[in-house]
Image 1 (cartoon, rainbow, N blue to C red):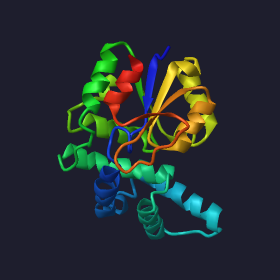
Image 2 (image 1 turned 60 degrees about the vertical axis):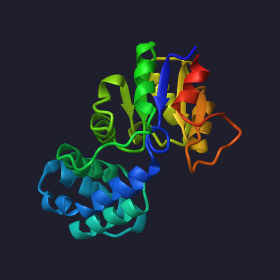
Image 3 (image 1 turned 180 degrees about the vertical axis):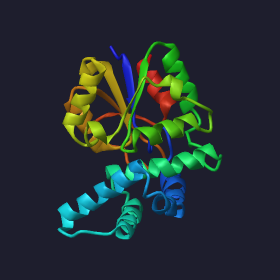
Length: 229
């Protein structure tokens, strides 16, 4: 029996184009805010993490300016680096708070999330975007503040999304049996890993998503709802 619905964001609740065409360009357009706040402890920490990564991977020490350049490059190539995600979240927070950004949702998502919550399912998010960025998107969405619907938020702190261990970590954190958790995603490799961990899975096949045959398929959350009933 499913007790918990864990959902991805990009390509599942939210268009990938929103991230690529809106959030990433916003970060790049405002990346100078990172440079302007290097003395802030939380910014300085993330810059040092960038430098440490470059030292480990390329065996060279870089300046603050070069670290900013790496951040820009990683953003353009969509690298899932924790320092980049943290700094993106800081920049996006300003955009959401001043009204320049609104979190995109597919049309039926808010309605179904509310319905599932009302039916007694617990809801959680697992995304490569940082937890603060997740809360910003759902807290400032086109459907209003949806954060009260979610019991938990997970990012790559629990592990990468294509690794079985990450889903075992989530299961342990939730205190549930894996089969009681339903994971929704548009990425086959993520679904494969969660299924290996014992979770139930549904592959969201939104426009532009390639369907597979390893998992149940749903075109939207309304279709998912029919699986639950």
